[in-house]
Image 1: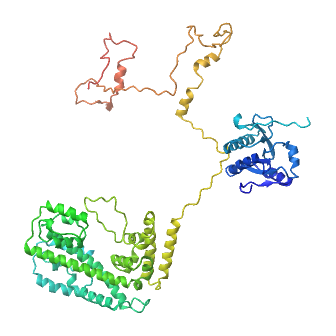
Image 2 (image 1 turned 135 degrees about the horizontal axis):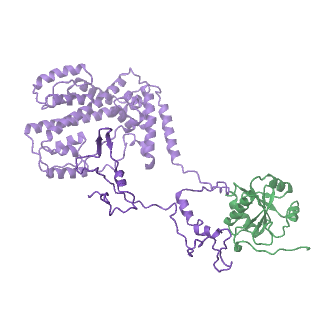
Image 3 (image 1 turned 90 degrees about the vertical axis):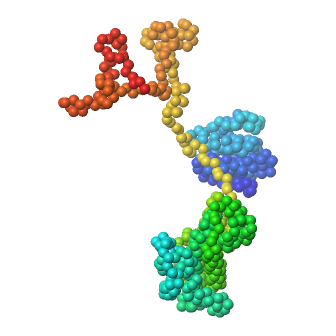
Length: 152
Length: 481
């Protein structure tokens, strides 16, 4: 992960600080494990595009196995790995990509360009004051998954 | 080159004067003993070489050559950096520099002399072989021969030039020279070659002493090039007074003979361009390097002229600087970092306007027909396509009573107007004589300009028919071309 240039966060304070201190930039938090292959794929996409998006987005990786992070997993309802959550000025941004869950993005991106498109859309929507945006990707580029309902 | 100019002017003044050469020589030697450099403005007897080219007869010349020979034999002086202005060696070197310039002038004069004499024999040769020494050599080889196949010019000229010379000689309209004229010409050639030899000797001597005369300059360029520069400039002080751009050009050969293209010749390739330090750099950087070296060498020459640094350290420092700069030029450019994407929507799109855009928009604009269809008049039920209020309503279309739903399409504001070619009407105010003008001189006003459109107004408005009019004139007055 150091090779990618993205920092991995394991403490709650770090995550808080990150969310609070990123101003006027989209914050992309990837919740996952470094050892998971799908996670690794996503991490590479994030790492490759981090420099290009550096003007309006910042990216960080959150280790799902850390003790302090479980609070976040509970809050965001993260069950499938990897999960990417978007923030703008400490505001949680939702995206409707045709999947049941709008609050996060599950899985990897098909290509670097897809990820860049998503981040740009989120940025544009957020600058206009929207809290939820429509995903610019066609349906076949969006990874499909099934929501696990627990205790409902 | 004042001396050369003077001799030419003298030639122009008195071309026909025939003075006894004997008297001239005696008088001239005395004069030249006093004056150092200039040639006196005596009347020139063009027939005799000695009246034109006097340098070799002067005692000054002989003295200097003797001294040079001695100095060459004595070898390098033991005292290295002690060459001050008062040192006789230094004086000798300074004199050698002026002498080499004088020799150059002299060679030029002799070249003119040879050329003028040889013109009767082979006029085209002067344009084919410009260099004076080469010309002299060629003239010596050819002599009075009319057939150039019997003459071997190998080693004197490059083969291309030999070819051209042979071809031109076969079609030349020159005639063989008289014996005495030929003899004089050959003498002059020998003189020129002798002068060339002595000049070479002088330059060699100067070169060997160069490290003591101009240590800084020779530290940068090397003794040979430094000596050549000094020789061409006419001394170290003359060299130091030149701007660097001129120093760069010293020694450039203008060999633009007719028929040879000048596109391939390099511009500004003087001594400095052919020096080791510049030739050692890659070809693409040579012009830049030459400019840099000429700048630094001019500074070094100035230091040397004022005897600022006798040890040559400034020159060595300059040389290192030059080498470092040349290396820096050869470095590859820094690798390009991928640029981050710009923030989306940060620059608002530049909307263009103008006639073209408006014309484009016209195609999608609301048409008059649609506007009328959208409106309704009060208390009049509108008709519809399916009747009875079903279908699209027609609004005000077709309400004029004509029953048609069409409306006339007026010309759009943006359509280009077709220009009618207006014929100019030259109205004649009655008199048909061609000499009359439209200006009518009335006693009251003086000049009255007739208004050509007044003539048109006379015809009346277009609605009234003038066909049967008794008062009207021709309905159309047009100038018949």
